[in-house]
Length: 249
Image 1 (cartoon, rainbow, N blue to C red):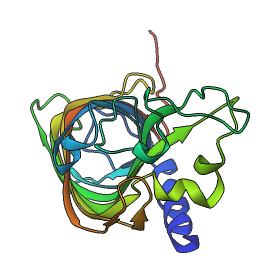
Image 2: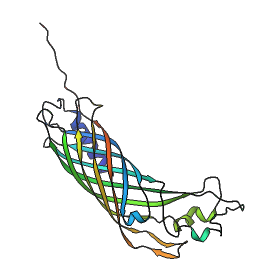
Image 3: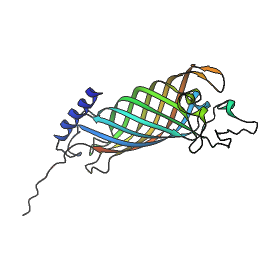
Image 4: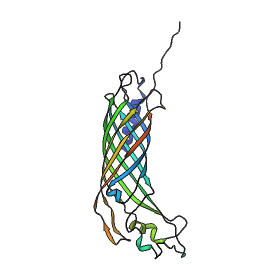
């Protein structure tokens, strides 16, 4: 991690030395981006979750040849969970869960997870006026993790606390591949840089809990977890704008 941070800082210092306008040439441009994606699950993931939101942050570099590299992290959150047998051993005959005081407990069931990928791609300019904008195609490889979050808030349910909750959360992780195809816009205005496009993740994952308490089953089968959606992001480029002198007659 220390080496990665040093690499990012050195790239930033190079970017700060550039003093060109986006219309002058194809720029070397390191930048941070913040993004949002609405995603739909497929494969094995569709059996467990519904549509989710994904909030992302990334550090990318666009070269003078319009090659594109970066590291990207996305936080997965959703409230549509349909896992068969979840907490079935805790339910009463009325499908309720009782807390330690004998009261009916409200248990919030949500999806949580993240992806971390290293990406590479190419920008294909659509105009000679601005060769720093155009169609962006990229792919990546990294890590995916997701689980079911069970939150009792004001109720005390010992079976869903501390180490016990691991028997219910269906923790899953593994290698992931990613693809993106969309439009990338870079402007001389630091606040008018963005991208939008279609995105997909294919996770080659497996359950990481040795035993599920509710279903009384071992949960370590290989899975193919897929997410597809649309992502839009805002970029903060790290380079100096050109200082121009104007002369008047």
